Length: 171
Image (cartoon, rainbow, N blue to C red; front, side, top):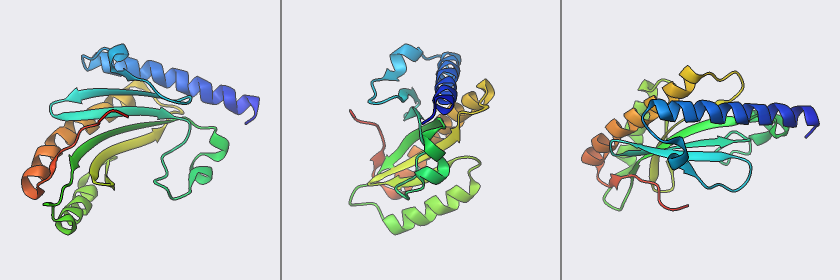
């Protein structure tokens, strides 16, 4: 990575950390108490809204879901990305996965700027965007929409399909 890209990326990371901490304070959370230990040059926080635990991830590359698109999405690792994700539910043996997946696809069509996805036995609600040109209102919006919608969906989906409300465990 050239010096110019490294400096821009660091500037985006530093600026976004400040925006995230302001947004967490605005939601009534202590940003330092929400901060998680991470490996590498990213940063993470988590906070609870109702029954939903939401994680904020600041990384150097976009999440690619194993599609091998990293070089397409983030050329040369020069971009920083903000990802906000909440585990909505964890599936167990009682869950009719086919019916649940059909419901998740239908819900995805209704969501604006959010996505439901499956990671192993977990159903997650997430939003992601590059940090470049990010402002405070966008960070507030991402944190609020993901956490509130996850808090609504966890009860709804568990009541309809079984399983249990999701939660993060120790890394």
